[in-house]
Image (cartoon, rainbow, N blue to C red; front, side, top):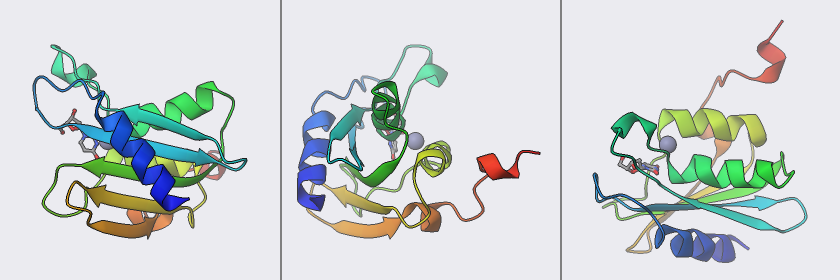
Length: 130
Ligand SMILES: O=c1ccn([C@H]2C[C@H](O)[C@@H](CO)O2)c(=O)[nH]1
Ligand SMILES: [Zn+2]
């Protein structure tokens, strides 16, 4: 399943809209019942409005009613496996368990398997609200 998820991320990457950074990213997330949702980064002339691939994939899942994710894959044209930004780590923490596997990859086939909890130890979570 990790290979299918990585392939889905790779396909989504082809739709990246990144005319400013020229850095295309794709992401895919897996639901508990085996569905895959994908996202690519989408930039804007107002740079700060740009959105990462990871968050677009998570938001696509949530918009389909899936709020619990079983696995995540991300791909970009990096020298080493891609490293998600802090904002995406926080958003992943909202919808994934700490032990949810994350496959970080690049176009050379380097793959690092980590977890959402390892990517953002001490994430601010629902339970922290009083
Ligand atoms: O993990 C990452 C890292 C970067 N980007 C996007 C944001 C921006 O559009 C471009 C350059 O940072 O890549 C992602 O989508 N995911
Ligand atoms: Zn991000």
